[in-house]
Length: 443
Image (cartoon, rainbow, N blue to C red; front, side, top):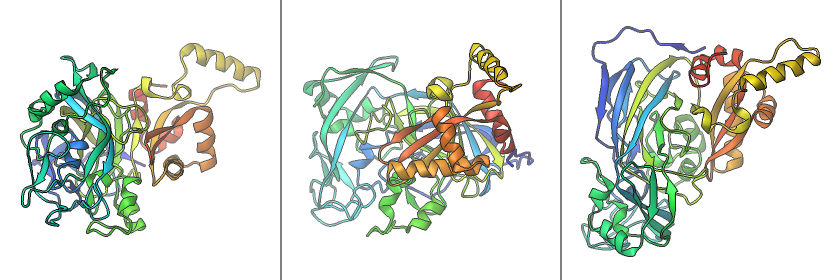
């Protein structure tokens, strides 16, 4: 059973830790942690765009550029850290994104974490930017065009002053942004990426949409070296038997990953995320902030942005969860998973009494994240995790997710949410009832 850690303060922990530094794309035990932050304390972050900028910056080894991890006072392997996402603010003025294609001859098995210059053969080459457009990223040593990715179909989007709306812009505007890409991206001072705005894609013009920012990467550090974008069961499967130095076997991947790369659009301000701890200090990190995304991130990428984030962290001793557990905002829950309204509950109770029952099951929503190489395996993983967490059989979880929940796609090809109303007594037994009641009201 998990309990709130009540260990005395060490005197070294800080109530608030500010983070504006980044990793080189790797996560694991060798990556220095900031902090520690006090159990119950806050972390304030300045996050860089996650996907496309790092993807065209081959010196970044993980496919993303995430913030440097922060140690949490008292967190030990086998514990969990509850993360309350207090605030997310987009600071970018514009972004570019779209569907990708890997450029053959420019990587060793994996374009995200093993780029190679096609001119001089250097791994993870340093680059310089010459002009704008998809051939502007050049090897600093030999001058070859060495971006590992280009667009198949892309767009550039401008945001309004309040960061509530976006509209895709035509070529002339996109190229204007490209010539001042770092400013329009609001790229943090410590970021090493080439801003993707420099490519000036403009295949979709005058499409308006809404912003609803969330974090594509947030969680705890893995217990071995893993490229940051591969800290999940789908992208992580690319590491199995890979020809480069970050290769893992299937058992190693399962043991060490923490599934911090979810791309679940419900991981936004107001949500509570409960993450597994696999390293001393947990190593809370985040990045890959998105201005908006439809479920599944079906294009492979969405609107990467810079921004500021405030989190509050809390240690749960001994929860032992293998992957993330999410308590979304009520409005983000599937229709059947939402708590009954008073009128619905009254009607259901009357119906139950007509059939010989004196009371209804007390239940509240929970969302268990599953990952795998494909959506079927991710669903199986999520179902198994939920069953283990709550002491149920997998068939019972399947039934509950069918009649009082849903399976939702976080990211295609292999991140899902298994969401359902779970018995309050089961949530209480594993120490999670308080978070459910905080989100959805006391029973």
